[in-house]
Length: 309
View (cartoon, rainbow, N blue to C red):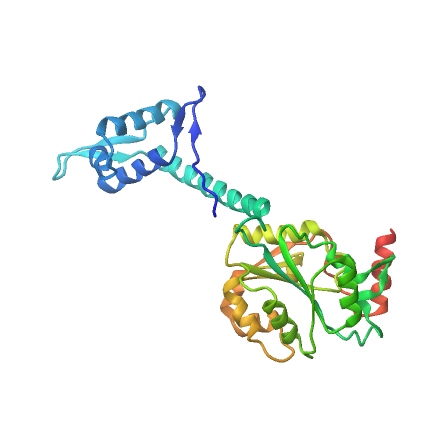
């Protein structure tokens, strides 16, 4: 299932002045040097082609073609400067409409019928040694850290799975109704692999640290929207242009992530394959606090103070 769009420009009286047909006709005139040849190459009657050109000229108030004289064929037609300008503007408008259509379609129909949601692996396997206890279940102004992170993840866009080694985290996930994978792997790559194993066939996957409790839903939606507008990109949340987490990876790179070994994550893959860098897009967070994680009790106190302001 996919959306479709035809972009038309209407005159003041509501009739079509320009659209896909006239656009293609102008390109064919440019290629063939003749309105008659352009019409023939499209299987269009010459009278109809002439009418399309004249209708557009009347609406815009300038000529689209001009006669050329001489040559083997005895002359023909070429586009005016104004026509080339119109083509460029119309095609930019058309592309923008298609991008918006695709993004809105994915937002409105994600998870419906055969439209897959983006996968989302919540990384929750750390042992929290610096914190001294399981930080993800620690209350932050009365709500567990992980639960606050999960509240920023819209399930209409995301197929969410929490991957953890902690039974406490598993119990919390059961309480809030979020799917959880309990595993025994000791490395970051194990968490990535287990998460991807639980999300087969997703068009992309967002990796979210479980200890970013001030992450906002608006930022997560912006990440997904940016990816949908720029398929194939690697999209990261950042602050003042500096990339941070979460990070959204396209489907074609998920096998490489699943093949990582040891305590390696997506940053290691980016460092190893420099060509991926040009595909990274950074979406600006709404607040610097969104990208702060909780490593120590001091970090938790800092975020508590921010929430109480």
